[in-house]
Image 1 (cartoon, rainbow over the protein chains, first blue to last red):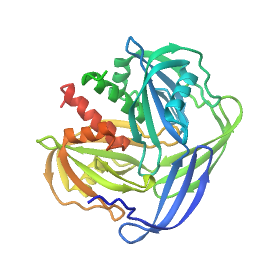
Image 2: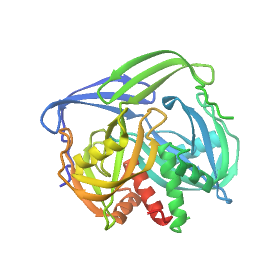
Image 3: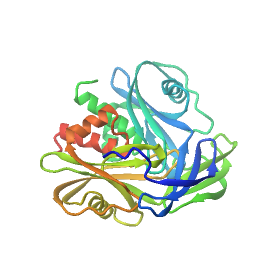
Image 4: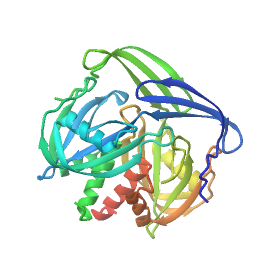
Length: 185
Length: 185
């Protein structure tokens, strides 16, 4: 029943756009119905890595930033790009410290998803970081960030009300709440 | 504290790629640190709409398909593209019937997210569909789908184990489980 092979038959491929973060490819060939068709794919050069940093008082850190594609401000868990070929946990540790200054003793992966699989191959991974210690933040020059430390349940309420819309943050905060309700945290 | 305005100053924009589903734009200008930079954006021409169809026995429908960008088979909730300017609930009703043949009497929105906001403006919306009646399916020619009806808790287990990775499906199935645990379903 499972069609493990590509039902498209691609004949040609081109790269109409590339920058340091994405590469867009267009494939032409025969679609699953046997007719000519095209498929445009956005390849991501980095993993999307998120970190829920939770302290002993069950507060977590949120990062606010202007998201250019949305033309809107967005409150999210700390996130950053992790190069393929680098252990995503190492990228998570680096990004958490860059954005918030936090260093965590305990890490566990809580989410792994494909962000938007009809068009892109982007992988999202989220870690829960606990056993926190405050160091010094060092954000990248292209970022202009605001940082908040809030009770987890307030962040969960923001998800419920649609005040947090970033899909990786939503999946992660839902997952933490499920872990609480199911006795895993 | 909230920087509601774009911290980039864009000077030029181009459209290096466009197809019926996405439009890629590249913006050049001055980044938040005051240095020259570029920003590539993938604009989506459709909403990503998902439907959790749940019957009176708490079974739900999953759709399996080969996802070309991942080069892999993926089990997901039924999903489809909804044109901007069309009520997403109408798109959801149409897509659910096309993919599964199901017609639902009761609909409620349970998820609204931005799928991948560092690069794209794609919006994802999921509805819970109940009060189901079986009609006739009519999939699009570019789709080659497998359909399963399974107990909700089996789908939730697939999310927990990483057997379902589609981000919209993960958010929706976690949300349904939270609604169950919090007495909202």
